[in-house]
Image 1 (spheres, helix red, strand yellow):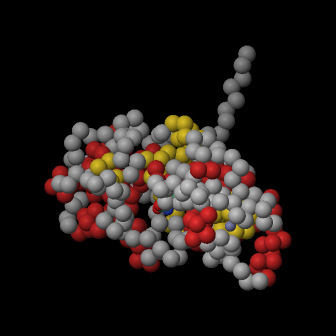
Image 2 (cartoon, rainbow, N blue to C red):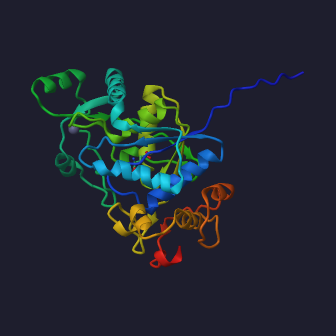
Length: 319
Ligand code: GLU
Ligand code: ZN
């Protein structure tokens, strides 16, 4: 006789993680919608986390606008909004552990130093490969730098490039040595860098699936290094293509006319936006106004295109 052992099911928990750097646009909405539908289609929960740690880019009025945008679309959440900045002491503690393990090293290089030192910068990459200048600095040297009031960042010493299976893209293999190399986890300004803050938050706050734009694809192996160094549970990752304009450029928050707030002010309804997004994901043959509960019944990853979605020029008349 075989005994069936019932294991407690792990509750699905997704997250919406907007950065309050400006008005959210259609491309952001498409990613949030996918994250929301994926979690809700599995009876999962959703956390709203406002990623406000980059003080130079945060705009105060953007937070209330994000809440308004999400409510307008009906993208509800069960937890939060959690301000990422309020978790500073958790980020600090994680850094401390990485320091004790020798996983990170103090780096005094400026961006200019790195650009000058990288012999063959890949032109197509925004980020030059770190040349390893400070790699052998010790913890004692960090204390010395501190005493001399010299500013430095902490970089993660990259020794491997974890592979992972993306829920949407399949197997992903990215060589981190060619994508930035040793990466910053703590900035010279004394603030956590995105890679550390997001991995610590997703890992500690019980997130089981991370759905985000594929511009962050090469961040995932870096974050996996952090999860593993800190012994945090790893979520499943899904990277979705961005929405681009007719010239192939991604929609930026400065694409003012495609900001959700602007569309709302023009009298376009949430159902029209949802219909258009549903069409862009292959769930509707033509854009037509649709409610969120109805969209939930149509959700599947299969039909979502693997290539960037190009905004038609006549978008406003096609919704
Ligand atoms: N806060 C980031 C953004 O709005 C997203 C980070 C993430 O999903 O990991 O671009
Ligand atoms: Zn350095």
